Length: 169
Image (cartoon, rainbow, N blue to C red; front, side):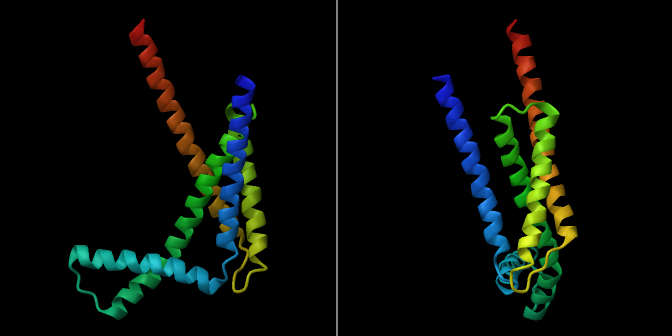
């Protein structure tokens, strides 16, 4: 029974990691114009919503100007977010295969950094896109942030478990 459960965990972690890598690949495969429409649409919705909430009554050209200013930070936040999830998925992948402690974090971060580099190389072949070292750094920082969140959650859970055990004694 235990062996079957281990196999299921390994398969699930592999599917999760491969699935998320595929999602990142598909986003990176979008030509520049298509990618800009997505991030620009998100930025426009944010600016429009802020305009309504705060009653700023912005004209359309003002909405578009603010949208353009917000587009770059949204793109970089998206990079960091997708790689935060990748770092977490990689951690799960390595953890269910017996990696413990720091090694699991290091392997997950290195895996994410290598994938970020290969993703930027991939973008060199996509119309209008460019492979940037700065994006590899941003992606790797995103993975590190995701792993930091996992580490903090692990500490919180361990602390609560310790308190719970202590109370029951």
